[in-house]
Picture 1 (cartoon, rainbow, N blue to C red):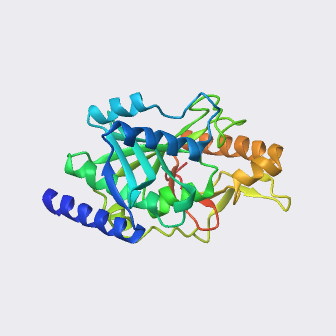
Picture 2 (cartoon, helix red, strand yellow):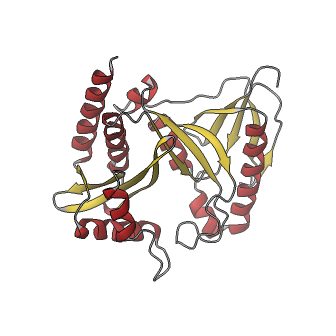
Length: 281
């Protein structure tokens, strides 16, 4: 596919995603729009009073310098926002948030598909971002629905965080890369996700016991699975020590596997990362 065809197809995928989600995505330029975006991110992440997640001045700097600052609108109401800044790899997508009233309509998906089209139009072929590897719905969204590929495990990447989503835990993250020219990514952006299935000979490197606690297994074998809890956010509230045990076990497992040259190749519907190791390891 030529570059122009790739750009045209990405724009068409973005238009389709917006129609299906019943939103219009547009750049945020006016001060009122930027302030509304800041208010939306605060509703989603619930930071402490007086310590906003984003400021209008910061968003203005991103927008004016040519970075990605866009909102998703239903009529005249902003229901989603996505912020990315230009980086060495191409574009780093710092955050994407959707108002609770618009969840379940794939507004977040529409924002990411739009971000891909915007990037390709500017000859940017890679987008990176981080996410909490313990959040199953985010892992499935990033790896299966979008086709992003984990590249690095980042222990306590943001340090101590005091917002309502991340407070009281280390901020371990997975850095993912999104190859915008990959045919698998193009397919994902028109709702053909990558449904990963563990091979029959896969070894459980991390699993759960009957009480829902992590159990470290064997790292031997060419294909491995690494399970995470179905709802770590609920577990943090109901059983905080169990949540901390999962953070430690997952971190130790993924750090060891990445250090050994292993790669994450997918994420299953039932909450397992699929891992492949290089031959001879």
